[in-house]
Image (cartoon, rainbow, N blue to C red; front, top):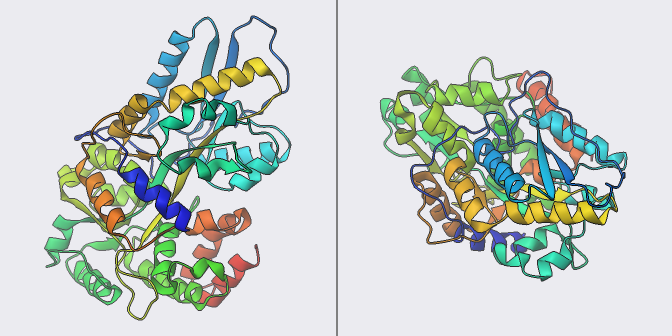
Length: 439
C-alpha cells in the first residue's frame, strides 16, 4: 500500500488538465453502459504478417460510444494511422459493454490468446501468468519511461521487466449536489456517518431521494460505497483479513443506504444509477474524475456548477481516519505477444504514441480523467479535479477499492450477493460469507 500511495501522490501533481473540459463519459471510466450487438473481444492469432506488408493491429476498445475518452482516443488513432500510413494501421473494435469486454478478455487470456492492444483494470498477475504480454522493458529503458510519473511503472513490472503500462488513475470521492442539500437545510457535507443519516432524513423530508445505488452489472457505485465504508470502519489494513468484522458491519451500513435510494436500485445498471444523479433525482453519488464530462454535458439544470466532492465521512468508533481515500490503477494498457517481431514493433510504437504527454494532456482535458503520464506543461486543473487533488494530497492513506483488492470470483459474486442482502434474502453475515466462499 505504501508504494501505491507514493506513486499516486506524485502522479496527481503531474497531470495537466485544462479548465472547462467537455465530452460525455461512461459511469465507470472503462465504459460499462451496455448495448446489444457489441463487438466481442478479439482473439490474437500467432500468424506472422508477410515481410514488408503494413502491420495491422486490432484494438478492442472500451473507450468508445459515449465514454468521455472516445472522441480523443479516436483522434489519436486516426493521427497515428496517418503518420505511419506506410507501416502500421490500428483498427478500433468498439466494446461499449465493459463487463462483457472484461469477461471476454479473461476467457481469451485463459485460452492462451490476447488482442493486439488491450486494456485491463485489475489482476495484473492473471495476465502476466498467461505469458501473452509483450515485454516492454527494452524500449522503456531507451527513454520511453520518461513519459511516466516517478514510480508508476512499478505497477506493471515483474522481476525488473515491464509488461503493462499503468495508464489511467482511479479515485472515487463522494459527489453531492449542494443545491439539493440546501433545499434540505444543509450548507455543507456531513463529516460523520451519524450526520450523514441526519442529512438523509432531512432530504427525504424535503422530497429528495438521498443516494444513487445499484446492484446490476458490476454494482459499480454501490461497490465503491462498500469499499469506502469497509475502510472507514476497519481502517486501511482491513483487507489483510477477509474475516475482519468490519466487512459485516459495512454490510449493515449498505442495507441502511438502500433504505434511502431509488425504488429501482436493485438490478439497476450504471446508466440508471448515474442517470438519477444527473437528473437531480438523487443528491449523493460516488464516481471518479472521468464522470466530470457527464456532469457538464448531461447534468440537468446546469447541475455541474452545483456539484462538489468530499471524502467519505468519518465512522464513529471506526479505525479509518478523516479524509481517507480510495484509489487504484483504473486502466493498464498492454500488448498481446505473437512472437512476430514486426507486430511487436508496431504494438510498442502505438503504445508510445498513446502515452505521449501532449496527447494524454488533451485526453485528460476532454474527459476529466487522471493519468500516470507526465504533464506537458503547467497544470491548469478543472474545478472538481482540483478539489480531488487537494483531498488526495491531504489524505492520511489511499487504499484500493474492494473490486481491485479481491479475487475475480469474489468480484463477480458481489452484485448478486448485494441484491440478496438488500432484499433481505441474506443477513450481513451471509452476505460476507457468500463473498468469502469464492476466495
